[in-house]
Structures are given as C-alpha cells and as structure tokens.
Image 1 (tube, helix red, strand yellow):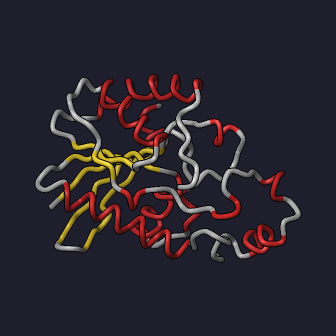
Image 2 (cartoon, helix red, strand yellow):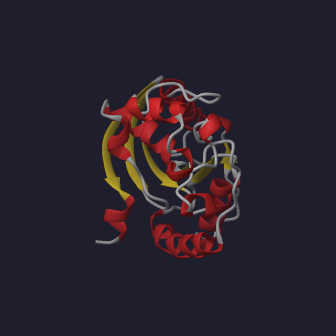
Length: 207
C-alpha cells in the first residue's frame, strides 16, 4: 500500500526562542509569535491537505496546538489523534537549559563529545529514542487503516529519528526548523516501511 505522509515540526515556543533543550519534560505552549507563524503556515500547507486526511500529533501542547490550527485552516471538523510515543526525547538534567547555561557541566560536555550518542543523564539515549519514534510512526500507519493521506505534527527529534531510520543515514542529516518537515511517499508491506520519495516542506511551499 502506498501512503502519503506530511511530517511537520510544531511551531515555536519560548523555550525554542531561548534555544533551550526542550524535550518531553517541557510541555510548553506556542509563544505569541509562534502562534502567528503557525496561522500563516497553516494557510499554505492546507492546500496539500485532502478532505479525508487523518491527523496525528504528539501529546505535548506545542504539537497538539499546531495540529489544531492546521486543521482549522483546512476547514476540517476533526481532531488530531495523539500518539504518546511521538513525544520529544527526554533531555533529563539538560531539560529547559540552553548551551550557555550548561557550558562547563562535565556531563553535558561528555554528551557533546559523544556526538549526542551517549545516554543523557536522567534522560534517554538516542538509540532508545529512535526506536520509540519509529514505533510511534508505525502505530500511526496501523491506526490510519486504509486512509492514504496522513499528517503528523511532532518534534524535530522525531523527524530526525524517522527520516534517518527510513533512509539509513546520519541522525543529524535531517535537522528540522520549526514549521518545516517533509512530504513523504511510503510503501507499506506488512510491517516493512519503505521510503519512495521525500521533499522538504519549505522547498515545496516556496517554489
């Protein structure tokens, strides 16, 4: 079965504006400027949303709020199904702090030196997070039944996890800004998910 999926990173929060590590331990709402940006983005992305499109989101406020604004812009009377496994990574003791605040912390420096692969103290390893994110992605695909078009509003980490898993590439190759992401065309054969095509949202919306 062929599916079309739009993976979207949520709008900007105050934590994002401070460049803080905002994971699943930070349930921030969109900032006022972030909310305005989502409203504008929603008008553009709604042109790619069909009447029978299904919506899914992380349960965190910033993703659920972004999904709700997009749904309203698409004039659809539905809600996004929340998927717990699509929460952002657990940043443990780094949660809510930015680089300047963590500079000099030996645990933080060790994590940086590992390329982000070491388990985060009090948090989650990248390997465990990628596994969880892919489980969440496959849960969405199962829940969608026979629907061919899906929108998922989640977090930058989830998008890096899903895209690097589907492509077999480096995790950081798919770093994603707020309100960017990917249009995907995927093929599903039982539990095997194959990526057929992908295109950056920002590229398609601005061409």
